[in-house]
Image (cartoon, rainbow, N blue to C red; front, side, top):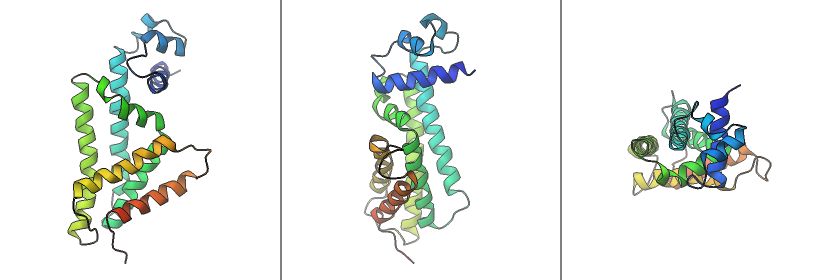
Length: 190
């Protein structure tokens, strides 16, 4: 039995539904069938749980990005794969995306700086892919940074509306959003 995993899952659901500030350790304990004082055998604090969730989310996004673009040199294919990984993650991890976006204000130092640094690293990955396409003459944008932000927003938005049992299958959404990203950067087609 993975008590820490159960506690993190309960905290994630409660942070999504009630918000970080409104969630108490007693709420989390009740969700996993423990008294609040017993939680401290598994986690240091509610702040620590939020930091674990947000750091893990960013580390998972970075790992997915690196895997997606590994051994791919063509800028168009790199952006397609990076966008697909980004969108797929947000379709499958809606709660993490929601908490990661909404609850950054709840993080204290040093957690806040760590998460912000990971976010900056992730955005830089997309910026590098777009810049490589511009340098190769296959992407045409006025601002590489703004293009990378727009592509990131595409994926993050999926977390708001996507449902696995909804009208659009995950693979179709992932493919279409990668097409949107390529259009956004004015990708030249061979």
